Length: 65
Image (cartoon, rainbow, N blue to C red; front, side, top):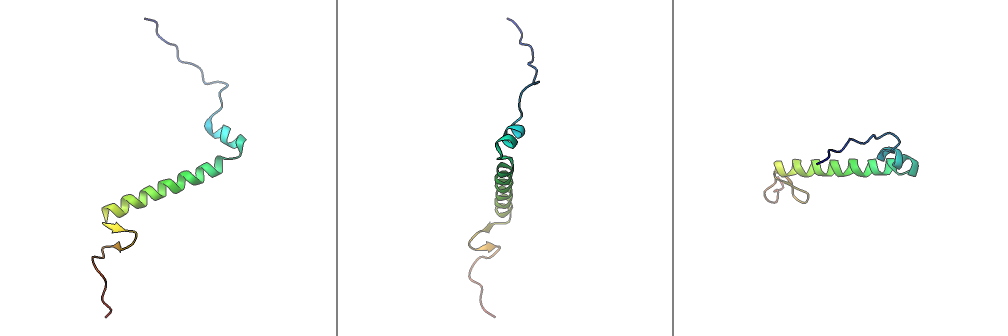
């Protein structure tokens, strides 16, 4: 069995370089940041038993005092 030699990455374009050339790097970064923030908010809401419609910690309708 022959072992493979590691290939050199010299001459290859990185994803960031490709997206910069294409002019879409900032758009991809914005989408990625939004997705991470959305995930973090969902995880926080799960931990605090929060819901988008009812809020955090509310069990039933609040009575007017």
